[in-house]
Image 1: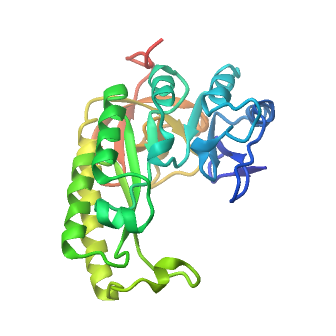
Image 2: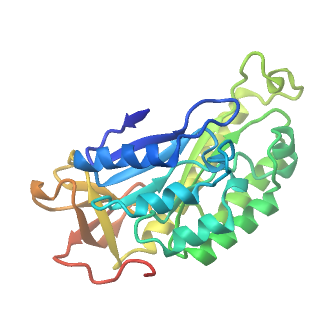
Length: 295
């Protein structure tokens, strides 16, 4: 199954298909799907699926996500490979090494944190502690210093105290995410958490959400400021914003700049000249001034 996204230059390939036991698409089928997209003009694909990092555990012999990634790297005309959301335990040293040395795999990871309180993580049945998450972030940044790290946070999970929430704020600061998605907890009938005691009041969840969203905006602005004067490789999308071309860098910075429509679906060098919390602006350069990542 292939699901197209809003951009003409990017498409999603589902590589494991359903909830429940993992069912992985064969590597050759993933390659076929990617080749078909490239022949239609796509420059970037996003690999996605339920528990993406468990890819291949159901195949015999077992393989992991690095197998299709290496095969996709060899496809002529495919410029970028982006990974969708991964759980912390699914980011292995092998995946990090491959990402750090690849010229095609985007320097961007979306890792689901959910909470910065180890107590709440245990109530959520998440298989990691807050400290283990931060240790993973350290390893990621050692491998890819300019990586874009994005994450999801659930605010107001049953039993979350103000102290627990402050732990989340501190972990988010320490992780220095480039973009943050914040969701207030809402009970789903039939789930254990819906019957937990100590449900958090709606107004408390709203207030905590505002505080965390505000922190996320500050962190995004900090990340963008780090790129002032630096060159980004921007894949240009079809729609303009305020008359400007717009696209994403490989580390997932939304970028606006002046340019001709003929640049749509091209990867363009852009030097950042100004920043905001949700995007940067820049000037197009005629050629790339810096090399890609490691050869």
